[in-house]
Image 1 (cartoon, rainbow, N blue to C red):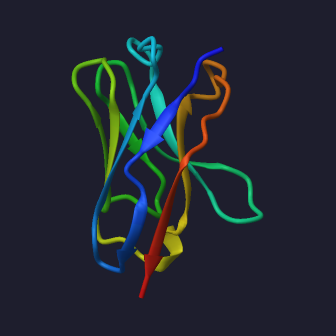
Image 2: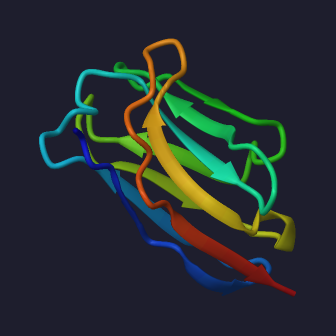
Length: 116
């Protein structure tokens, strides 16, 4: 069983920034495409950003231009730099492989709360 560890969340004022980090004990994410997801209270998880093994990135329209997903080459950790945060970004953030690969067991996630 792989334990995903997300960190870096917190409480931030609107317009501020946070940097999330994601890793696994055995570097399971290395050599795989990885996504950052978020889950609003009472809603399903949604993919907000993804990065391929080679570094290509994709973003949900809601975060495009504000969030940046990155990694060193194809390794871990996988980061999510979140800028110009809005109250509607408030959610629990998770990372995992992509659906096409098959998810690992979800980690605890990291809470991001943005206040105005």
